[in-house]
Image (cartoon, rainbow, N blue to C red; front, side, top):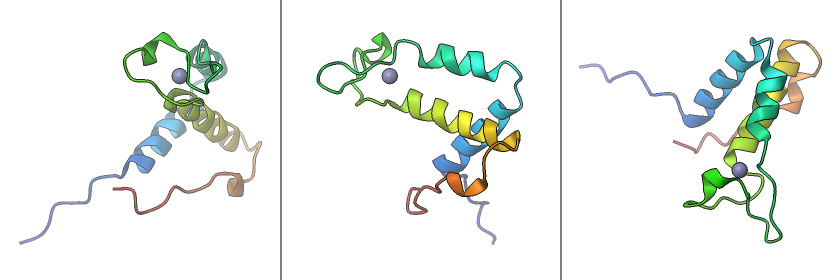
Amino acid sequence: MSSPPPRPIPAELVRSFAREMAQIPDAPHMLQRLRKGHESDQHGWCSHPTHAYRWERHPCATLRLADLAEVARHLALGELDPPTITTPSPTLK
Ligand SMILES: [Zn+2]
């Protein structure tokens, strides 16, 4: 009996999303809108209303995802060298 294929780890899902974002011509404006309002308060928490019931440290996951998508876009456009992307730990499952 064969085992089911391994499910993608979260880092692979994020990279896949970022690659898709890299293909969207309007991505810079989308990323700008995504980052809007995600500022650090005086205590280092993200102040965006979306975190009102589940606080997140600044930079929050939304900002980190936007940064990853932006790096992927620059890579796809040949504006960066691949070593600038760090690979998350394979222990994340
Ligand atoms: Zn935020």
